[in-house]
Image 1 (tube, helix red, strand yellow):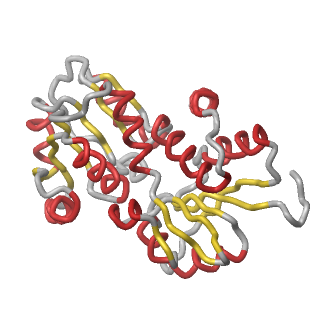
Image 2 (image 1 turned 135 degrees about the horizontal axis):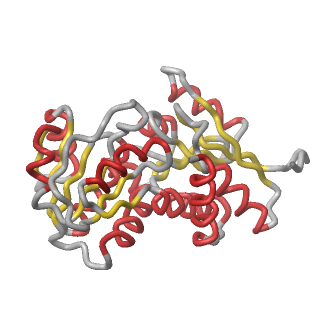
Amino acid sequence: MNNSPDRKLYAVVGNPVAHSLSPLIHNAWIADAGLNAHYDRVHLTSESARDDLRAMASIYDGLNVTLPHKIAALSAATKSSLEARTVGAANTLVREHGAWTAHNTDVAGFEVAMHAACGDELRNLRVLLIGAGGAARAAAVSLNRSGARFTIANRSVVNAAALANELAPHAHTAGLDDIERLSADADIIVNSASLGHAGESLPPLSPGRGRPFLDLSYGKAAAGALEAAASAGWTRHDGLTMLVAQAAAAFHLWFGVWPDQAKALHACRAAVAARA
């Protein structure tokens, strides 16, 4: 590692964060571009995440922020992009004049993952979106823009309805008990719920008949849901495509360079396979 005083520092911040492949992705891109920078992980358990993130602007030049701190990341910034304000959460922070500017690259990453799973045309696609957290917010913004027809299913129907009212007024809402029924008519299921992180299982699904099931997590966190979906006949897609795409957009914000996404995706799949 280059320890020169002008080396720029970046990191992914979250809880949990030890599993994150972001350092693998970004440090490879930094090396490829010949940049004097380093990317690390920060495990942040604090309940005052907004203040902690603000303080980190004195150390880091940029941050990726993952669950459960994306809403705190937006409030920690002095400026924010339209995308971050629309989603109501930020996953990328850029230091400008000693303070953070908040961005959301999850929307762009989700769009890449959806096209990879479903093809180019998303208008009128029937989507069952599971979850109503930070990742679901980005997915809802993207799906609403694309003209997809979707239902948000969540343990708390109240939270699902609040998300729909705020970001996608035409979306329907339901509880987790409705997933088996709703999945019968869906063209794709998108699982944004962090079931794997909490050790919980995916509710039963109707027979998939080869339809795509996209989990926005990857590795161990997604393994249970993806296995259940595959057993029910769904074609599984993990969140690595979205991970790499949103990372590339963040890298461009920091360095003004578009990195090699195909190479990074290959490295991530190899890393996940090695862990398994």
